[in-house]
Length: 211
Image (cartoon, rainbow, N blue to C red):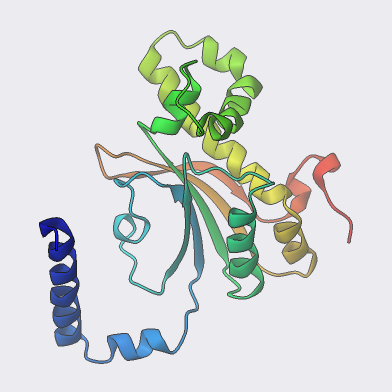
């Protein structure tokens, strides 16, 4: 058995022992089901672990992660997670969390072909196209990169609000709040971007679905 894999198994046993010592009923409660108040849509980057950076315990956050925290309307994986979170778990909050230094966003700023992921990166490039005037006007490359990360999160929150899943929940007066934040890998701080949507009247009329 490889050393790295063996270490993972050993670490799990230690975690179970420590957790049970501090809270003997912890796993018994988890086994009874989940009622998390939050769905987290984040980047797959290994430096951005959802539960850890917000101090949440197992059972408190339902998580979906992909390259550059994207909300793509044809992504059945994301839509399935969203549907289960909203309609079964009845989460009250959905956070889209981007992070500074995101490799997917950086790749979308360039033209180098990476491989299969090029097809995913194209969705991020679409965000750049929507905001190209603002972004191209920023001369400093790092500042432009950081701003692109922020704008990408804002667009993903808006795209989340446009889904029939979210709008149907609002149509049934189900409390559901969408938020956009950015995590600083080098600081550990989460920044609220001030994009918070709680009903479809906050969208352009063309996106407001009638049920």
